[in-house]
Image (cartoon, rainbow, N blue to C red; front, top):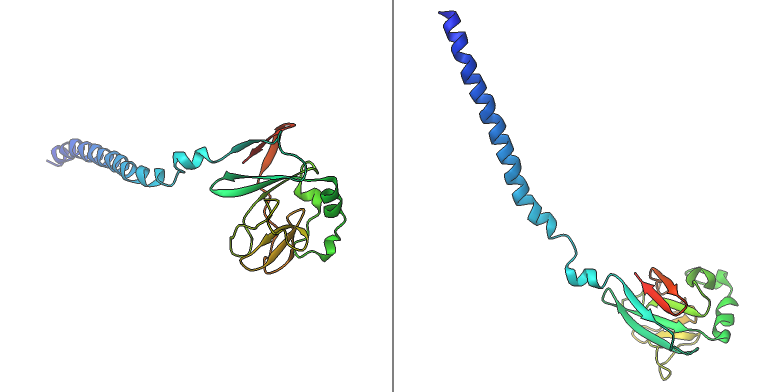
Length: 181
């Protein structure tokens, strides 16, 4: 009798193992079906990906002039600096600066300055891109919201801003084209 009951348990145990495996596999598939859409929503939207890089032709930008382009929803200032502006930026004693960066650390080519045009104090957009704008005491940019003054290398020189205007990731794809992002 004991031999009959042991041989009778074997098919039941095999069925039970099959049901466990099937239920586990179905649970994994169901979990994936629920979790994947939530994870997928964390990916950037197509319009955001389209703004990931911005290509700018600067061939027509004369020395002393600037252009503002949008990158990731932020203004980016591109300035074609004059020899005087470059010399002025290089002559600054870095030890006197709040956010200590040399001009060489902020530019790839001395004549081209590329910075995110957002004041590091409270996120305002500084003036200084147009010839008629106030440029502050250091002939760069001036944030009228709270009085931050930036120099010709976009370094904070006076006012409440704690940091220099940020330099975005960029590269020159040729002598007259800048790829931002």
